Amino acid sequence: MGRKRKRIVRTKPIPTLPTVFDCPICGTTNSINIDINRKIRTAVIFCGKCKIQTTKPVRPIEERVDVFGDWLDALVEESEQDQEPPISTEGSNITE
Ligand SMILES: [Zn+2]
Image (tube, rainbow, N blue to C red; front, side, top):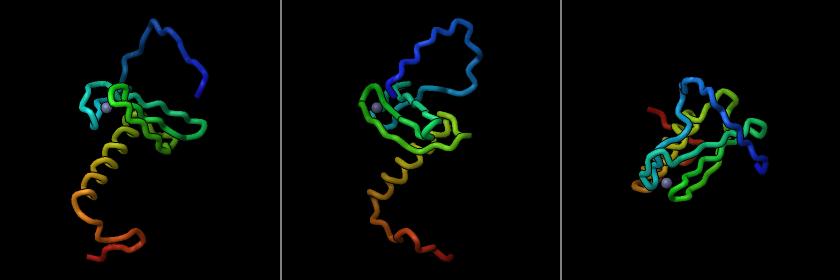
């Protein structure tokens, strides 16, 4: 953080992966920015609209789209846990 990276890229390669995403919290299109800091292996997910911000660890192979997908999964899990009280605690495996 802190260092400005402002490069004007004139010849843009065809983007293969999205870099901005729709916010699942406020529903705004292309409002989620994900900044991956590979040195500390952390991604910052930030919505420019509702200002939600979260950080999560990333693996070197992960791209923004992976980070976003993981975050979405976590949100879904959270909302599901809100609806039902957690039955099993961590460490106990469900057998059959
Ligand atoms: Zn938002």
